[in-house]
Image 1 (tube, rainbow, N blue to C red):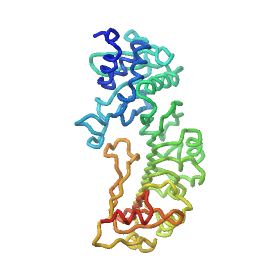
Image 2 (image 1 turned 180 degrees about the horizontal axis):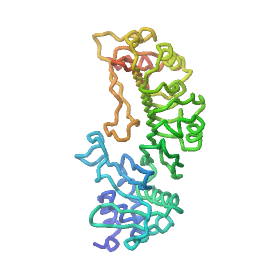
Image 3 (image 1 turned 90 degrees about the vertical axis):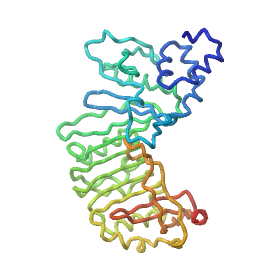
Image 4 (image 1 turned 135 degrees about the vertical axis):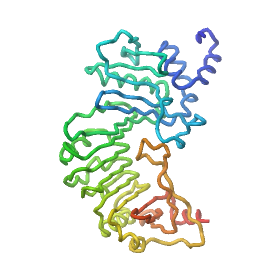
Length: 372
């Protein structure tokens, strides 16, 4: 079928009903075809939840996933991981054999691609000397085809090899959030290296930090604390306090060194408006948390009548990018606290060794009207 032979209205209708991967492939055909796709972008990108780059530093390969919420049997909240059906491109380092490469002008740069009947998606190639410009050009193509209203994430699940220091590759891409899975060990266990890494990197959307070695405390002004969502596992090592100066939305902390006074101080700093102004959800797991059974009374939590049903607090969970369930642990409890500065409510609860806080976008009066 030669699309250009059809009237514009027919062309647009065909474009509007194509899947996302076919649209991407069609954008390689010509500038006019790309313009037609861009003109239909609002409708075609409506169902896209996110485009996610997952980079493996060991071999320099990046797989690109497009998460489409419109797939009837593959809703993102029904899946535990991405699938090959979500793949729209693979970007790899070019070897000596380039005979199968087809050159396309991508956002002003000639890039080699390989297409095969063995897989649906194209494979793009780069040389180390122009690696960043290849990623930038491909990303600009995605922005043209799918728009800048789509959520873009750059993900590296495993950073830091204790035996080998490396310089992370974080290309400068527009409208992209940075997500990292990091082991606090080796090079990064030196607080100077840790701080320098985050000070020179984009503000992270998500950090998963596994503490395997002791480190000196971070500066309260550390850019680490600006991350949107942080998961920290420190059950074997007494780590610095990663909670007190957190300025983001969600934090999950699993540790073995939290005193009652420290936890009460965190709650009081939220209640006074001194800290945690952006907080939506906190989950603090304490291995030696025998004191938690009394903590709700000691923080001055208010009570809802036991015969009434409180609302359930959940928020979108950005902490685990492998988990497509996408919500925090539901928090339904009869105890809550109130922030003094704006009368904002937070539900609080204790489950086993966990202390939970779920902040509502409601005043106390509005919150109580939600109680059945």
